[in-house]
Image (tube, rainbow, N blue to C red; front, side):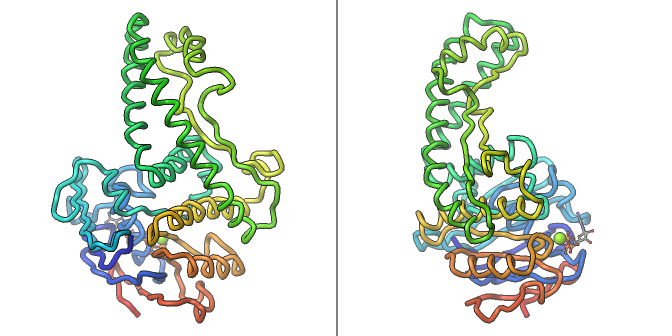
Length: 358
Ligand SMILES: Nc1ncnc2c1ncn2[C@@H]1O[C@H](COP(=O)(O)OP(=O)(O)OP(=O)(O)O)[C@@H](O)[C@H]1O
Ligand SMILES: [Mg+2]
């Protein structure tokens, strides 16, 4: 997947702009508050139907408008051209692929798989399990299209079970337990299989950026897998009824990144933590690119804030080799270093929400 043409309407200080990006690396420069992150945010919205820096869409929509639109002409993995578009206002969203309205955001995510590094990305390893679960499931979701229906069926069973727990009606719970156990086990094994494929790629990337060995990624299933899932549910029932929700299952899933048997976040420096997060994200896109050629779009907001000079050069070399479209922002062109080895790149300058190719 590659963006051939991108149209942005009413995203932050961008009123209406069109760019024709390179299929390789796109550098975006501009002073503070020029609208660089807004460009990255617009692309992110097209693939994920949400912002990466605001929890609601309202602050993202330009003050003078009541909705935003991002659309693009793309080349899909099979070589076909697809038109993607999303319109968002405070309450509603509307997505289109080739002029057809689609109901599920996941269709957009399949059509435009993207990964991002931004100044708060280190939270992936620092904050609670939700972000890591989302990260893991993004990988699984793009790796195997059977994952999403299993996950949806699991969530349905979970919400029905939780309603019964809240209503204190234990007699009906076992109807949903069957579904919960069946789909929950499937979801967990999808995650397990994905991590097996992911690990060697991740380790190879870490070796290029960090002098750390003895790194391990461990799946947290969300229940004690030395016992059968149904037995865990039986043992938890009293607690589940008391609190009105299901304590164990893949909805509590997570992964741990260990360095020398200690949690990475408690052990490595802040800079190393950022590099580990970067490596996790690169590994996901690399795996995607290995398995489906020409897939994935990589976004990096605030390049120089994230990495030192040596690692910036290494990352650019890595991205240059990887068959994937990249968008990177910085306040100065010199932050990108020497670009003589970078093939097929484009440079854009942003000023007051206007984007021009230089
Ligand atoms: N809803 C909005 N409507 C109009 N302008 C907005 C809106 N939200 C933010 N802005 C403004 O848009 C401008 C661009 O913001 P953006 O975060 O994209 O800048 P940036 O180029 O990434 O800056 P920095 O280098 O500081 O990261 C800022 O001046 C910001 O105040
Ligand atoms: Mg910014």
